Amino acid sequence: MGSGSWSVFILVGLSFCGNSQALTKSPILSRIRRAPEANEESKKCSYTFLVPEQKITGPICAARGYSTDKDRVTRLDVAGVRDVLSKQRRETETLKLVVDVDGNLVNEMKLLRKESRNMNSRVTQLYMQLLHEIIRKRDNSLELAQLETRILNATSESLRLASRYKELESKYAALSAVVNNQSVLIGALEEQCMQVYSRRHDQTPLGPPRVQVVPENIPVSVPRFTNEIQRDNNRGFARERGSRSGPPPTGGTLEVQKPPPRNFSAEGPFRDCLDAQEAGHSTSGMYLIRPDEAERPVQAWCEQDIDNGGWTVIQSRRDGSINFFRNWDSYKSGFGNIDGEYWLGLEGIYKLGRQGDYKLLVELEDWMDKKVYAQYSSFHLEPESEGYRLRLGTYQGNAGDSMSSDNGKQFTTLDRDKDAYSGNCAHFHKGGWWYNACGQANLNGVWYTGGVYRSKFQDGIFWADYGGGFYSMKAVRMLIRPID
View 1 (cartoon, one colour):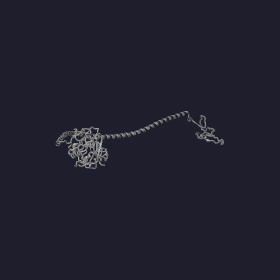
View 2 (view 1 turned 135 degrees about the vertical axis):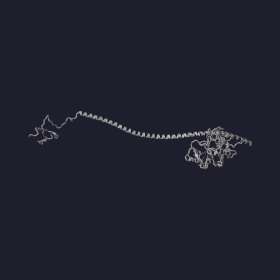
View 3 (view 1 turned 90 degrees about the vertical axis):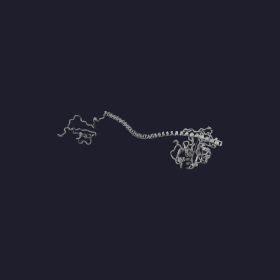
View 4 (view 1 turned 60 degrees about the horizontal axis):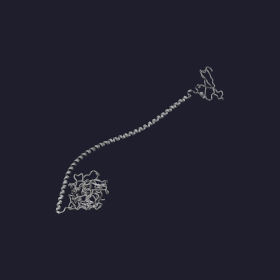
């Protein structure tokens, strides 16, 4: 070689076991030129390296592979990795706990939201209820104010009526005194008339024929002779026995008094009590009755609890609270208390009977609380021009027939004598009735307590075929109903 760039030639002969590609790829050997093969048969690689001129400070080593210290794994590296894994595991567990806690918090938040929605709904509901309550209280306050006004008006009206009632009481007391004086005067005049009559005929008038007493029908457990008459505490005087048992007949027309508001129906008026029953009123009580030809309605007691109901009560006696010794006008228009003792009125009974065919039921109750009855197949009255003549049908019952003898007779009162007796039967029997001469029944007579009574004349509430003329019944009723 001449003066080339290579000053030192080093020939190195190497024998490899098949890893020549690693060497050819080395950057140091990038300029290697492969020497011609000396022996193809030996299949060995021979290389010639041309190394630049440089100072070699150490041995040149060649090996099959190479490694560095930094790629070597030591025990310290394994321990570090284990520490890192342990730390990561702890952090993972911590994260799991945090996730669980967060999940519980999320569920609690959901529950709280749901409760919040429910609470909002409840608050809204309570608010609406409060609003309705405020409105209701306001309405109640208005109603209370109206009620207070009504109470004040009613109070003032009550005071006015109380004052009026006191005035009427004082007037009534004065009239009662006048009536008592007149009763005494009438008694004295009766005595004088009897004395004059006895001097003329040399005998004392005995009065109308007495009803035959039927002792076997008289209850034996009551006192045989009592002459007590029921006192009415609302009146200013006590009733006397005999011909002066209570005040005399009134002079004017006395309308039916209004009863307390008990069992009263404001509906109607109805033709009769059967008409009220057919209209759906099945309770016994006071109803407005207006017959076809009547000018105005009247109150009557409708009995719906016996014999299929529909009965109109035209007469009731039970406690002696009402005086039945009255004049013609009173018996014509009616008097008494509808829920107690009363007489419906001859004119009303007449117009009821003109509406159709009616039957009559008479209820009797003695002082042993035994009840008997007498029923007549037909009943009606003729007009006032005929003296309200009585027309009866055939009898059936268990009380005995004591009213058929009055059939065809006109009504008699103290001021209108229409009976068949020479005197006035109403005077002796102390009540108005369809007297014959004078009759076997006196249901409008004096109400005596105890049954058997003593009197100058037979003036009690008697039914001759049940107890005789001197046994006064405890309670009686007369009822009419259209014939089925």
